[in-house]
Image (cartoon, rainbow, N blue to C red; front, side, top):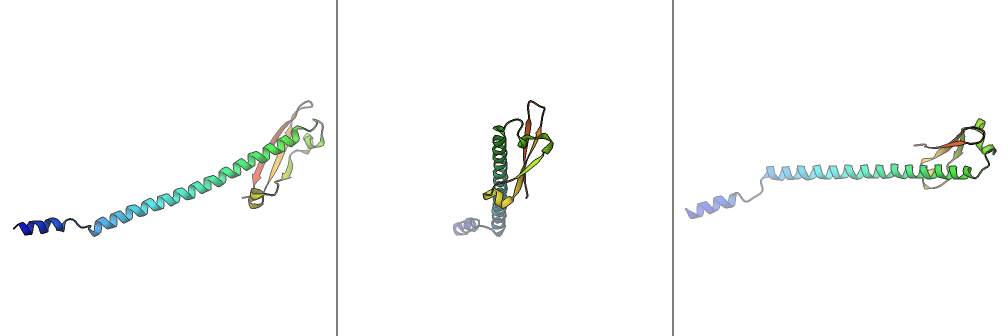
Length: 120
């Protein structure tokens, strides 16, 4: 009788097909979720890179206009908005786009608004 009982115990030590299928499904779910996260992070990184480049292009344009005389033609209110192409570079060549500045204000002061638009 002792032998029969030990055989029954050994019979339950293996992995069943149902357990194997459940583990496979769980691993597949984790892999798919991980891949979706990687794709999301890559998309977010590209968007962040574009926003940073747009902020730098806008800053560059504003700094270029900062040193001009208040009565310079580049700051003429009637000529607004003025469109300036983006310089060639990694993002400018890949996505393309324009930067536009608009000048408003009175006789003694000017308010310059710079907008960068990507052609995506």
